[in-house]
Structure formats: structure tokens, C-alpha cells
Length: 161
Image 1 (cartoon, rainbow, N blue to C red):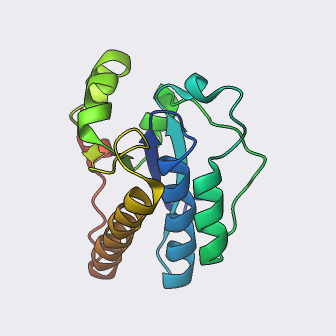
Image 2: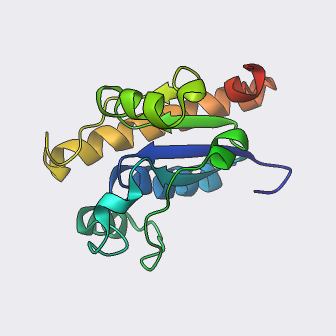
């Protein structure tokens, strides 16, 4: 991302469904609202969706219905230490699912990121989960807009050692 933008990274298990939806929605809202942030997304176990295609059909359908562009050719991307080190904010989509994975793969980061409570398809339908995800992304954009207006952009990852 450019110098003028802070970076958010949305993570989920496969980087196929929830995190990709969050990334695309966040970027569309940030651009529309003048928020100086841009998002990417990653998976803690991106390999688990190997052979499923580049993006969830539910994510593609919902983004298309909302008129939000997305890269339908980009395959899931594995989270790396560089992603965490270069981010201003990292959000994992479900604490009950991702906290232990963070402890396993990136223990020094597990308590430095934000966790939401957005269910995966094994716990809820897309019609249930994606609206929750949408509400969380919208609330995050609002929070960051307030911080930006006050000149108080908080970057918890860069503050912690």
C-alpha cells in the first residue's frame, strides 16, 4: 500500500469466504467514504480450500449483488509474518476458531490482533454470516473514520513489541 494509506489485514481459515468478503467490502467503503486505509486478506490454512476455486460462490454472489468489484481469479493466500509486520490492523474473523491457530502459527501475534465473531459455513449459512460480517466491516470503517477525523489513527500492531 502507498505511504498515504494504513493497512488492514482480514484473516480467516481459508481466505476463501469471510476474509475475502471483508477485504472487498472494506476497500469499497473506504474508497467511497474517503478513509485512508486499504485492506488485504489472508488465510491461516489457505491450503485447505485447494481445488475449490479462487473464491467462495457465496462471497462472489453477495459482492456482485452489492455492486462491489472483486478479483475472481485470485486464489487464497497464506498469512505470513510479513503480512502481520506490515499491517496497521489485523482482524481475525472468529476468535473461537482463529485464536488457537494464531497461537500455533504466530504466537507472538495472537494477543495483538482484533477478533470478531463471524461464523464459517460449518456453523451458519452465508445468508446468516455475511450480514454479520458486513455489520462488523461497516462498524470498523466508522471507527477508523472517527479516528482519522481526530488525527488519532491507532496502530496497535506497531505500538506493541
